[in-house]
Image (cartoon, rainbow, N blue to C red; front, side):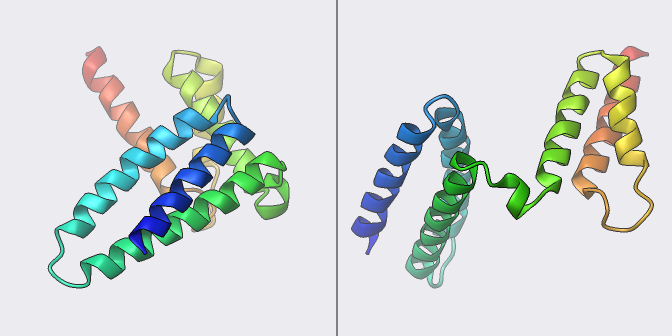
Length: 140
């Protein structure tokens, strides 16, 4: 089973690089790094290690295939229209971090404008608050 999963993973990664050569290498490196951390943690378990590893790798394989299909055929709007909103606001946040006050205000408006619980990503709020705290500490 491990050999089959390994072969399928290599085929899928090759297909991803073939279908999207400009963005695939960075995505695959990030995926490999995070998967490596997960595999390391799974290998530290004392029970059902082999089953959990196969389950994780199979799930990752399916996720990579579905994510590639959604990306290649530009189906982000169909599967989640908010993906573009978060991508755009992430871009605003990044430009704000580089000193552009206009984009910093736009990202703050996006994060601070959510009044309904669950409307805005919690991690986005936490990152922005931490960044603001870090900038304040280093600037004084």
